[in-house]
Image (cartoon, rainbow over all chains, first blue to last red; front, side):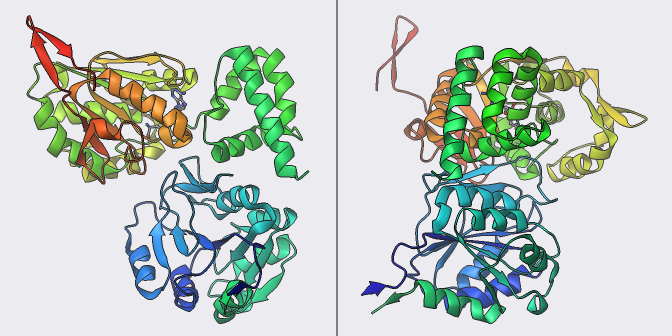
Length: 196
Length: 289
Ligand SMILES: C[S@@+](CC[C@H](N)C(=O)[O-])C[C@H]1O[C@@H](n2cnc3c(N)ncnc32)[C@H](O)[C@@H]1O
């Protein structure tokens, strides 16, 4: 067994807003249970949302999907979803911190907050992905990921249910790969999967 | 060296400087959220680097006050997480009512909304007059706002919704005087509340509390400091005393976990276990465990 991109990347962060549930339910069924990276997701939603999103995604995804908990350490093969009403940040020891600081880009959780902290925590070993959404959240975060040497992916705006957010990301920084929604998990598999 | 690594040097030097100059210890705050707040100060003050804050906190008195304000996140609301207040009504109040008189400590009360929410709840449960509430924070300017109890009328819509979801028994407007753009908390709610300055990092125990409420403060601390503050709470509670934390905070992975039992998991309500003690000449003798 040999990992193609051995140790090149340690974690993936995904930011998604309007249209996110559909977009995520295209991506996650394609990733195997033993996917070698952790995936942390900020999906914009109401502060009093219940855990429907998590249960729904967990049912259709081979990877474990769970809410990110305060001080929990990130593990590979797990999808962490930011709890509604809190910002989610990643510490340098690769554990989560929550905060109730004011909303950023009208959002809490905010994608920029996750991405910027993740960029500091993982530096060049981070993959950032911006998907459909009707806000500009995530573009500053993706810019920082790029500046610190990470890999940047964006859903092709013309194929996004809400193109504003991926478009803002494309304008903010240099994007390594612009992909259609259904190309994203094959791409991730190809890049990071364990090959025998 | 990467930018992130240089910034870490700046942050460490700054925190050390603040500690030695002013005694405020931010070294055990959760680093990722602390860094964001430092960056916010850098951009508000038109600085370029975190290290430029250092000379200001060393020499500029007014700046230090602003700095503490900037470091403390006072975002709060009345009846935040209404389901928690419902659980307090149902599971905690009946127990507290078995005491003739109780003491409540709100630690990290910010601008006071949560304290007045509790006062309303106690009033509706017919228990307010048998309660002394201590409300503390380390941010003096938010304590002043808390003491005044004047809030923007804009927030009232949400507070009112929360109040009903929390099981409010009358009309929320009964507790407020509204005037122009603001709503002022009724004096009758204030009379048993004492607001005071207390720094959870540096200051000591508050004696013999029946209920401690500390919500959305521990998330700003690292594991070490969380453990220290949780022991402080444990030592401040009477036997069987109740601890209520924020909805995303827990004691499960902390050092005090064996010393509490769970009253409500989702609402993060815990009860200090009765330690084994023997009665010696009518006085409690604690057995070390
Ligand atoms: C986000 S607010 C929580 C307000 C309220 N408890 C709630 O949940 O809505 C956090 C509060 O903790 C206070 N705080 C932070 N560090 C503190 C310390 N070392 N000692 C006392 N209070 C502190 C801040 O000043 C701020 O008011």
